[in-house]
Amino acid sequence: MRLCAWYLYGEKHRGYALNPVANFHLQNGAVLWRINWMADTSPRGITASCGMMVNYRYFLEDTASNRAGYLGTKHIKASEQVLSLVSQFQQNSKL
Image 1 (cartoon, helix red, strand yellow):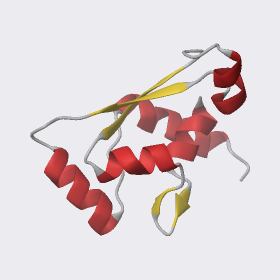
Image 2 (cartoon, rainbow, N blue to C red):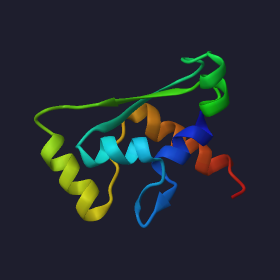
Image 3 (cartoon, one colour):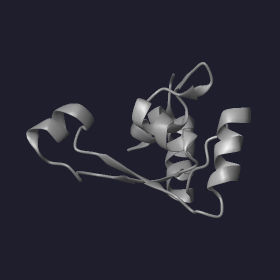
Image 4 (cartoon, rainbow, N blue to C red):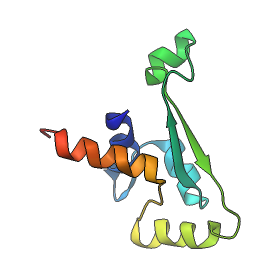
């Protein structure tokens, strides 16, 4: 889960999220909200994402500012759960 959080939050291509689905939602003003362990246990889900699924949440009053922040400064808005996982990854990673 920590690695998944880092991949979605920290891995970038030209400053934007490397994952195309994440990039789509973030460009539209969503918040990287939650990572769900074993949410998709189908063979395809296990193969594609180790069974993990991600929720993006749209707060209508914040979508314009989230979008502007992402497109302008490449800042990813994320929940405390995701930021905690990212922090744990950074503390324990040897990358």
